Image (cartoon, rainbow, N blue to C red; front, side):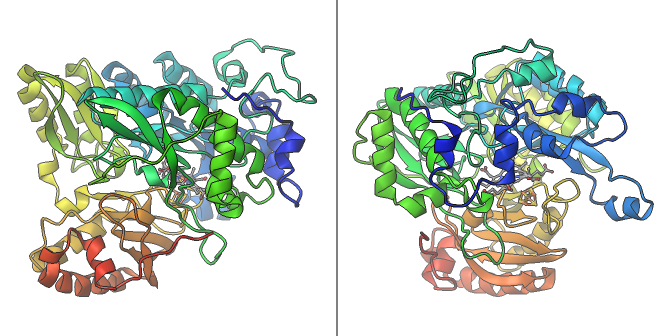
Length: 577
Ligand code: SRM
Ligand code: SF4
């Protein structure tokens, strides 16, 4: 391992402007302690101290308030209805059914009775109040998963293609993802001290010198911004590998992973009206062998640590660092720090970034069942009992679930003898794909209102009804089986990766969206803006016209996204930088 260590001063040296306030808070936090203990002890307010809201993210905890109640509470001169979102880190989305049962219980007793499968194979709780936070974190840890580094300026949940045991190479790729996750997990003991009553380990930091013994990879001010890694096994791109800061694309021979193409600089977020921000697909800089993966990952992370923008958080992601310094420069940095030479990119082909629903073969005499969970929200409603259904499956199936990057659940490795029973449970509770139209199953929405503090328009609560209307249009044009990848977000941050979708809807204001078109099924192309700031009637009329002409020419195209590009309805977007 390269083990390059720099001081926090070195880390900001690449930018002319002074570090942002968040940098001050991070550096002054004593390796993510801040004043969280004091904040938690303060029973006067449901909130934590302002500076601690930044530090708590590194512990997987976001302070939120119910936006549906915000103005009413303001009128009544009450403090906002504060509660917390907790994100459980689940590398590769692998969770045992025993763990699921604990997570499910906690949703009922400590949160808002729902679990939210995220677009990065993790699980979120919403509505946890401050006095329950510590117990919630402790119980999550009791089942051997945690919330550390699920958010914050560090490496986040590492994703991996969710095809359990299909081949040896899938198992190898998953192991790689888990090793990357372990390697890049923060080393501070603050998490254990604060949430698990662990003892403080004193005296190992050396913030003045050239080494940082507490956080040898991150240093005292951690990364300039969040950082995301995914491992993909072609032909599935269910992790949307090109939207990550760092992607490893497995290259296999005789069912062995012989190495990985290394893709860098992907990211989705942008800001409406700021041309200095853009979504970007990752660029491949070469090929590395499996034993080089950790050095490459560390080298990419430390390059971003040292050169990422620490003054303006809007421009701090790796994609901007790469576009500022150049891809060739970046490759050299990585090679030098990792002490290797990347070889030439190897051939690969992705076919789909969606999930394959229903049964598929796993290991001998075993099967996987991919269930559809609308927008990842595992909940019981008058219409459907998804939470009960998944729980009953977890009580029966003593094995694993795999959470997918499309917010779904795979019941992994079901013995042939148990297939019928599991399927009957899934059917009874509305979890089988057959209950939904193709458009819905190819869709995702981010959380949006009421919990997300950044939402400008509805997302999760609105997409299903809009999709039903779009589906009617597709039926009208004889396109009802078209699984057009459609993704909605409540703001331009891109949490459901809308900018690689065939149809992307990005919230601008209540009831109004930007309509993007032209992503590919492989998830390797950024779409283009087609209509700006439009309401539902305009969305439907725009799409209806396009569907009419697509229906006429469909046989020439492999999908709607390719059609809109080839027919020049939108221009293919060009790389920035
Ligand atoms: Fe995200 C911020 C939810 C995946 C880009 N994201 C947020 C916050 C925490 C809002 C906030 O900062 O206050 C949202 C919490 C909402 C809530 O109430 O739960 C939030 N993001 C989510 C999740 C839960 C969406 C979902 O429907 O599943 C996903 C959690 C993933 C996980 O388990 O770690 C989620 N977010 C993503 C993705 C997709 C991905 O990573 O594959 C992206 C685009 C990829 C990328 O990072 O470029 C994404 N989220 C953002 C951004 C824009 C970051 C940027 O630098 O461009 C923000 C805002 C920010 O960081 O300032 C954000
Ligand atoms: Fe919130 Fe925007 Fe992310 Fe949706 S895309 S969850 S509205 S930050």
